[in-house]
Length: 244
Image (cartoon, rainbow, N blue to C red; front, top):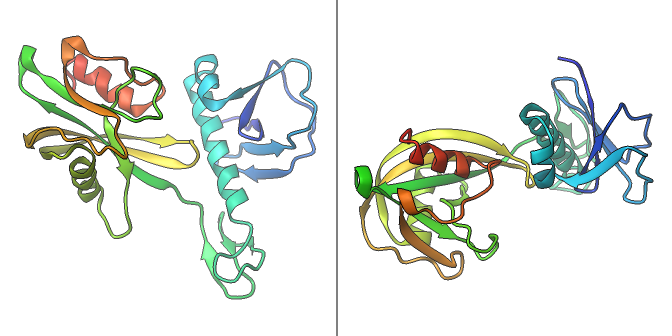
């Protein structure tokens, strides 16, 4: 695999028509596969032929493999920026084995990691009567509904997190939990682990703090759905196609 340079200015990605010249970087990280991730200053002039886009906007403009590389670079840069000092004694961290960092004062060592979240698509009924439980956050675009998601808590398994999130956010219980897939989520540094499940009991009672609305939708009457870049949409597309 040929190494590439991936440049960010703040949270925005540089899309270049050609190779970029050497740049004065505020931060840079050599990724395990050899790519170089760079962050330049906010006031750095944007070279001719370079377009500056957020990662979500860039999705429609890039090959899937290139977009995944850019998201990976962004997550590594975000980790690097957030781990300059020791969390125990505030001493500047030094490079450690692999891609870790070690505190020269107290010995604390940290390694790159993700914030792990779970997402679950819940169904009930069979055939033409099949329905999906979808909800919308106040932060979604108007009219968009999606599967329920939330972060795992310390000491909790992925499965326990799914059952807890469903009970807290929708007020129902589920059964037949099964793994669908996973996706790195660079907004800013997540790993989304996706599951499918069947409704067991209870009526939808959405948490008013987290959920603006939640409903059962027939497969032939779904609302506006998340964009194609998310694993939530992949699950929904699979359900419509009968692959869920």
